[in-house]
Length: 63
Ligand SMILES: [Zn+2]
Image (cartoon, rainbow, N blue to C red; front, side, top):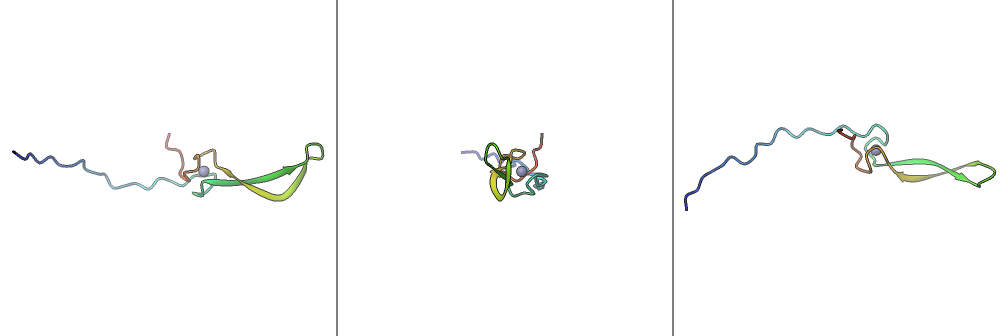
């Protein structure tokens, strides 16, 4: 079997994707937990939520 050597896809130096500006690479954001439908009281508790900017990847969207 003749072996034709093809150069395997040259990889450009892997660029590090910039961290997500919203969650700072955490992939999650914490938002204030609203308690009560009438009082609109802001609790000190915060809940972790999936970062909608990067969808949890922690990296800034490239496009
Ligand atoms: Zn994010």
